[in-house]
Image (cartoon, rainbow, N blue to C red; front, side, top):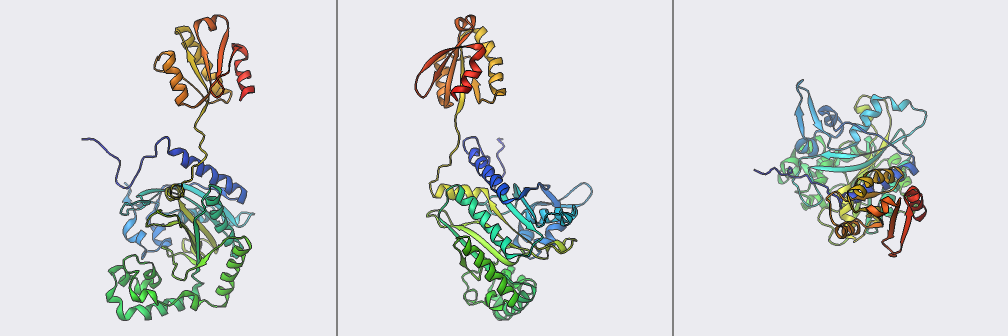
Length: 422
């Protein structure tokens, strides 16, 4: 019986992984410019963390978490998202006491959700995300959104749509909550069992239902924007003003609620408008989560963040036919003739690599013609040929694969000469 990879996972092979590396490199570079520092948290956490932060009425908690018991009978869960773990670390390590506030962090790594696999959706997927914790300034909301848009733009994506909404503060949400209960309750029996369970616990989650999204009551449901109090309106207007100042186009959608319970005030999604991208158009989502630090035992520290799927990022690049500038070449390939020359290239290859060159040699004892073909497949800039006669004369032949120009170089000065040429 052959063993295959688990359903909902993927192997990222050479030739494809370079795209991932470039995106990760660009994300780190951009975070340095925006002054966000990397944080790395465990792949699994205590299950209670996600119950208290993500919310027990969410699909993630009810249907999608990989939960297990360890040998101490403790309930642990593979992380389904990144924010809860980052905020847990922020509280546990008392980062709220750091001199520099807000604390600006980013993470990158695998997340796990038991979902039905489909295009752009996996059970193990990779997220890049940022969290800014410790400020209630709407300008930081705009900064977080700008960072996400800048990352997509830096690699050439153009067909993007930014959707924003306000979920209001606690007072606004309570007023909206009651309006939603009054709206849906008379006909809640027409909705799925999940929506029926959410009616009293978290009626706003009904608006996010995929099964009943075409129901007529969804189309005329009370809008959160009609229930924002003065402070929430001022906050949301400021966010829009800052985005306009940054020349970032956006649309307001009052039905955007996001899938996690901890959101309040600003919520946003970035979508791909590329033709043929697929049914799942969301590339990135995030929002503000004032109150989350208190929920998991810390002091008041308002925060905002986002998470983006690297898999969907790559799918969006493919949909727009964007070729990433992947370096797919080596500096020098060593071709050897004869046993003594072959033995000598083992040490020479190591010296080239220690000197900072990408270099390779033959390991299959191939003929010289086959070695040249291997050099060509490796996109080598130069091929260095060493035979018995060259070795005795303490020389090596160097050929430029771009021009065909050849030169004979003393072995002692070979690496320095190659450095001049490259």
